[in-house]
Length: 173
Image 1: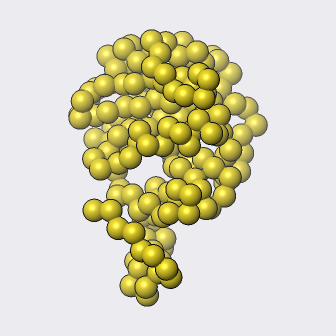
Image 2 (image 1 turned 90 degrees about the vertical axis):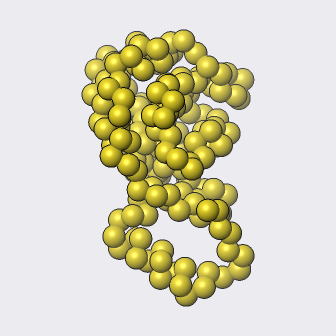
Image 3 (image 1 turned 180 degrees about the vertical axis):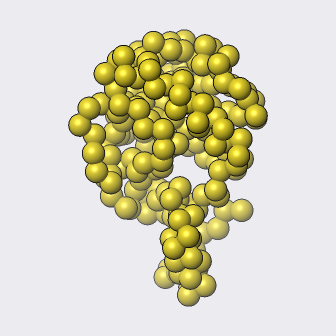
C-alpha cells in the first residue's frame, strides 16, 4: 500500500524507521528523488534465485574482467536518491558505500516492486546492462543501454551469456 507523508514525519513513523534500521530490515529501502521507499524483505524463492544467479554469473563475469557482487549495494551518489539492486557486475576499482554506476545491474522482481520504473534512473547513471528476473513468469529480460534507453538484447555485450540460456539454467521456485 503506497503511503506518502507530507511534512515532518510523525513520531510513529520515525519510530518505525528506527526499528527497521536497528533490525537491518531497511537494507533494501531506497530513496527516489527524496521519497523514501520502504521495501519488504525478499521471499525464500527470491533468495534461491539470487544464489543461483551468483553462481551462474560468476565465471562469465571473471572471464570478462568484471567483478561480480551478488548482494545488495547502493547505486547512486547520495542518501537522497539511490536504488538498491539485487546484485551487479562491476568494473575493477568499484568501491565505497555509494556506487555511481555498474556495468550490469541485477533485479529480481518481487510482488509489488517497481523494478521497471528504476530503468530511467539506471540510464541516468550509465548502467550498461540491466538483467531483470521474474520468478512468477519464469522469464529473464536482458536490456542494454542504447541512446539513453534500455532495449532488449539476445546476448549480453559484457559477458558470454544471454537471457534464454540463463532462464534455462535457473531452477525456478
